[in-house]
Length: 178
Image (tube, rainbow, N blue to C red; front, side):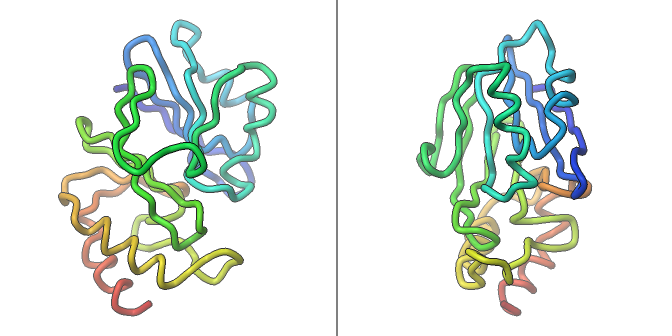
């Protein structure tokens, strides 16, 4: 799996392009569709756009990308929790509401990489004081994610990557503090 991180938009959203075999996917195209499209490998077939949640800073470029590429959009509405096979990708979808009710985490088990949107950041978690956020759901999502191994790389919606091991103490704290 080849991973490219693009930082897009005023809120500096991490947009990810993942290549595997002859296919690629986009995760959270928040803005700057032309930048995203220009970073797609022309030798790879775009097979889908994945949205970790429906805040504008994570979906802002979807419409413009779809104008040039007819591909499915994957989100909570059409992904089952558990393994989803899409072309060359086996993605374990984990429902992780809290920051927003439609939050999902995409876990690539073989590569030990999770794309967690605004659920977990380096040294923090997503805001739970916004419309459609839920402190209780966040607590339950944190409990769910703490069952996974420490050596998983977390790719958040904003800021630098981290590992679940590096965030475990923070998550344990937030689980109690919420």
